[in-house]
Image (tube, rainbow, N blue to C red; front, side):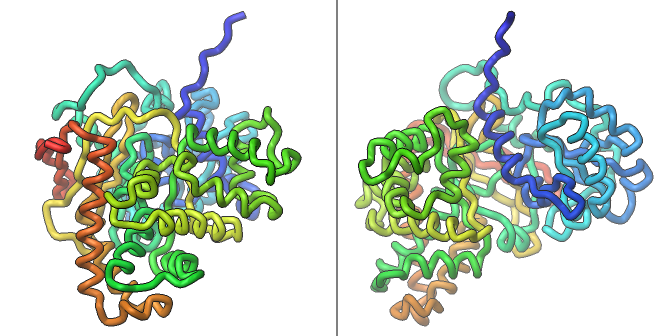
Length: 464
């Protein structure tokens, strides 16, 4: 009897993320949000189930969708349960019915886009009425973009990088105003196969940076201040992203089991699959939450390299390690209370980045500008992805917000000073993180035009 090949870790994580994001509507149909669908990039296959004459209608169609009309939906059974399918219709009702049928037929990762194209457009994502660009045939292997093909070791070439960003189906777009309200800023980490707007440490790194800038401007962080800032941040800016990885979580599990203050009976069994540990870290028993917070904030148990380095090499980052650990603990406390805006993402595999990619628009950005979400990882290629324009825009907003915080009275009326501190420390931290994780790698700049064309050029070498 032949043993089936082990499923790649990125495929397993994509399936777990999909299952975790899937909800049930009033009729118990599986649904996911439009924002989730937009971020997934090549991790999902978007299927438009409307009739052909609807595609060129006023709503248009999602540029990366595959058109499979509802009457032909049985064709999706040819995928034999592989891949993660998101079905879309005008308002989501037809897609929800089709998703339920496919689920009953045995497909384990299928859902409708909640609210359909109406929700997609309301969330700031673009559509097209050029239906000739839509695919009409299903891929032979929906998981192919996540598999790790053989690739030469070392830096990514300019041609490889250009092929990555010029492949339109890989890139998702979102209106900046909608992103600021509903999106999340991910870390620059190259292991993420989702489409991201990236900056060091993602949202959590930006909160730690904001607090470091506040202290640099003379503010005192009183007890409870970090929790107040995190919760105020959620109210002002929406979702907050934090990532870890399998290696860090495994180290934390070992430390938890060795902790005499943590009863073994309160932990998942030693045979528990990853999904059980995900549920455990999302809502642990109250009796051990304090000890779990301690372990989650230990550098060895932090899977984000930027945050881990911020704690272990604090002088290079201009931030007290207690501030970073305080932000991490505030994040998990709020998550355990049920705040839905907190996204905890677990990445798999090791770092194999071959370049740093700076993503720009060829014009000044405004709330109505559309921003490209670029997947840092496609197959065997990885890169650190940073959006300096979006980051600068967000930090200007954060500076004004910090200068109005009741918990930071020393900053009142000093938004310009806070912005200068954010810029200075942000540049220092970016240099420190790339110097530690990407030294010697080429730096490429991808500049997108209004017509979605892109120019790519090499602009330097990290540490060169």
